[in-house]
Image 1 (cartoon, rainbow, N blue to C red):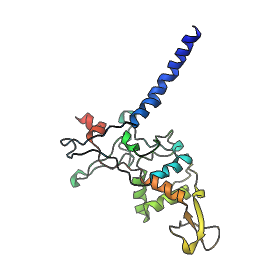
Image 2: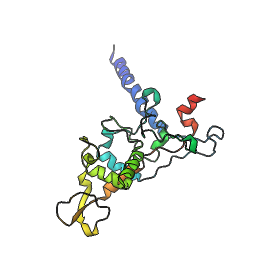
Image 3: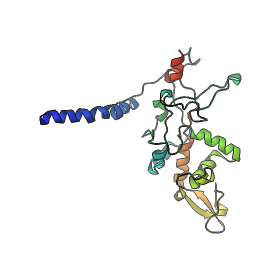
Image 4: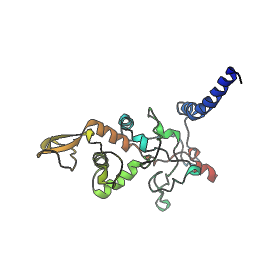
Length: 231
């Protein structure tokens, strides 16, 4: 084997996987074509737009603190794992008797629309966060607090809600202020009497991002593999 052949073989060995793993997905994400609802299948018309409620600017804090190292944001295709039926992971189960649609579904490229980086994640040391806002909303309602407050307390003291979790507390995202002027104070003891613990702007921004992580809206049947297989 001559040197030229060796170089070509090396380029193919490393270049082809790179194309399929990075280049093609990147090209697809940067040139998403609009998807329209089908009047017959979806019983509605118009162009589908992924709706996000929350602060996408909080994604920078999500990245900076390594959240994607332990959490995914990817409901896998059913052939790769049964995640549709995991409680509140993939959306909301329907209630046909009351006209509530089943919005559980796999992840599609539009779920990352508006983000500079798609946090698909690496491992699941912690649970998938594709629909963490749904789970937090329910947990907060049971505690009688707001979803925002639930997330803030979760960031400050993860062990309050999850026994022996490996998720580190993010106390550096909070500060102590005079209790009289405190707004949205957390129910924890401060280091000094008369002081209260409140979130810094970075904590509020990160919580705003986490609140955007819910995929319970209806999508066109054309984007839902389950609907395609049913046909």
